[in-house]
Image 1 (tube, rainbow, N blue to C red):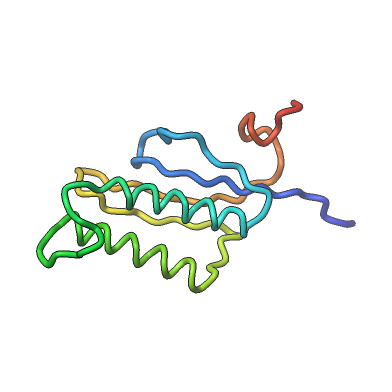
Image 2 (cartoon, rainbow, N blue to C red; image 1 turned 180 degrees about the vertical axis):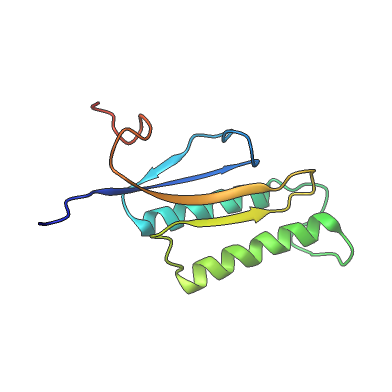
Length: 119
């Protein structure tokens, strides 16, 4: 018997225990999901204010968090990380809870309306 399962990848970010504040991105491939994950991480990274991100300053907590996210993005991008089975990372943004960035592989089905616009 041939497996005809069609997988989709969902990419999002949220504070643990809460729903995502932005729409979840639905991707047709793991490569597309990795690119969407990088976009989410960069959006979080670029939201830091209060310091000059071009000139990382020792001792600046915002700079340290910015640099940690930048390094994570570089690692994912340079290694062409395989997210086909999913991925999860907690990102410290200097608040009481981190932001959970994730990729989830799911079989095609009624996961959310964006994946099944005709249903």
